[in-house]
Length: 100
Image (spheres, rainbow, N blue to C red):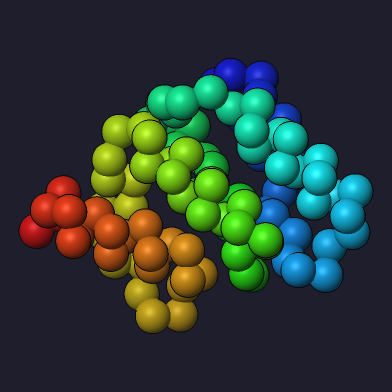
């Protein structure tokens, strides 16, 4: 796994909208430092970094980064109680025909 991905993963999930400006800026810089495409291992690990909301659009950037790797990352329905971003990843794979 590349060092940029490890650095991003070490910080854990993205902050919510109440995160400090410094934290949000730092996470944004970390996310932008990860070159595309990601590997399958990196994509599966990055799924754990979604936070409770879209974090000023960073969650969309994370989703697109994950989708740059081998798909589908989530091949099994994560269920209605899962994080909305996990549901989104799964449904996007279903809608694109990657999962029957």
